[in-house]
Length: 491
Image 1 (spheres, rainbow, N blue to C red):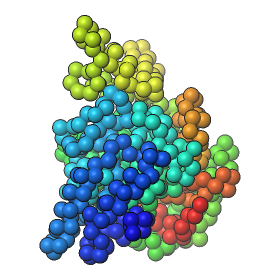
Image 2 (image 1 turned 90 degrees about the vertical axis):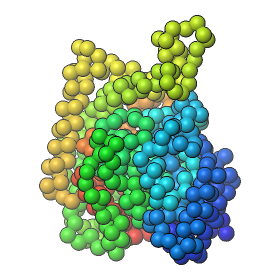
Image 3 (image 1 turned 45 degrees about the horizontal axis):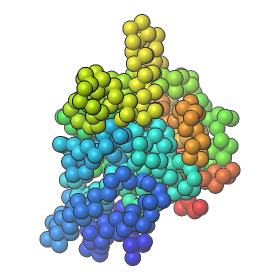
């Protein structure tokens, strides 16, 4: 029974739990059993919280038995949480040795929302250290493997959450997206992931990588499940100074409407700058087939140009390291986390020794680049210029959305590569986020939905759908319509 249960989507599980056909404890235990059975192969989880998850599930079952209204549409359905959100009852490591074993004294707002919604948290998922990477190989606790081919990467930084979904260890997951860390893992594991509009999901308790870019978001195996989770975690939070005080968008309604398969009256823009001969041929052919399918569903498809997108990569890799160098200064060995001290060292020596031992190679690289970019005499030449490019990219989006309702592109130019293949070539790794970065720089919303398997290697490809800020429901309408028309993806 547990195998059947773990294969069900979250919406189906929720309806069965709320109707009393399945108990939340049964469903949660089935997923915990699945984790115990297969995660040794995938390394998707850094911490499994069996006791806490079963206790949360038992509380949902008690409420159902008492005839109480479910706490949310997903009450009782378990979830995998990226290990970058603070939790008081399990460690928060951010994939780094410097926070090994650290337990936060407070829950992130997103964690609190999940608990209040009656969603049992199965555990914390693996990630690139402090969310810096595109392959989950930068985790201090070993790489996560892609369930489609365990010799390949599951994307990053949220590869653990994506792999947990793809291997049926969880029906729901939470990721974060700074430059594509929800969407790129979703693309290479044939799962669904949304980067909501910046500021619509609270960052309070999300350990910062780059504060002006980071955004938590929902992940699952279907568009509807992702929408249901989106509505649970979104909403204004006075504890987050960048939180948008606006009503949660009707994303579930949009997903249900889209599933009917009618996109008449919708204008879709194909971004010229995100369709290149340098992309993998199988990715391009899958994308072109997806665009053709959108046309058959009634959408009007036009090509649009966003000329400054070609500078997005350079701009992003100045803005992000600059913010990283500021944010990671808090890991000073004085207040929490790892401390290297032989008893004879000065405070400065303790800080230096702890950071040398606690931070990984990629984190150190980005701290150094960011510190240099912000240094006296270079600030305007690097960081200042990058901010100007960021404004131009946002203007490109604004002009495009005057012509169309949504934009589409491949989510990533490549299917998942072999573990170790790009680990010593940071620039090659950065290129995998080419299509996802512009949305983060503009603060808009985007989704990756599986478009099929690449003809050249049989591995998953993602279709990226982008929409203006606070128009997240458009993603779900288009994503659900495409998903219904595409049908199941069979290996």
